[in-house]
Image 1 (cartoon, rainbow, N blue to C red):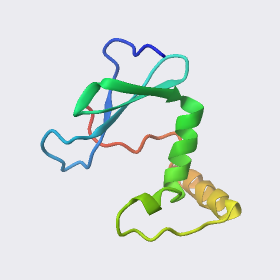
Image 2: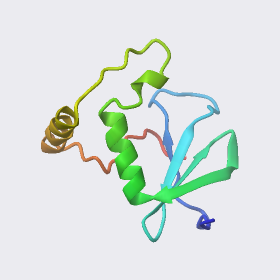
Image 3: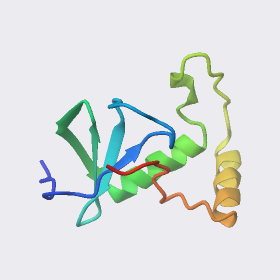
Image 4: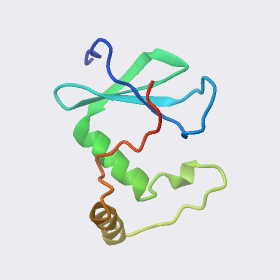
Length: 106
C-alpha cells in the first residue's frame, strides 16, 4: 500500500457555492505520479492510484462513460472515435484531460 505524504494539498470536488461538511471527494497529487483520493466523511480511508489511471478515469468521466450511474441520467453510447473527437475538442479549447475539475480546496 502506498504511503500518503504528510499534509498533502487536498483539492475538494465540490461546487463553488457548496456549504457544510459534505461529504465531498478530495484528491491530492503526490510524488512518483501517485494520486490520493478520499471522502471528507472518512478522511483516514485513502485510496491511491497512479496518475495514468487517474487521467484515464477523468477522460472517461468527460466522455460520459459513467453517466449511467447517475439516477435519472440517460446513458449515451459513444463509439471510441466519438470519444476521441470529444476529448480532442476539449484539449483544443484549453480544457486539459489532466485537470481534476475540482472546486474549492481544503
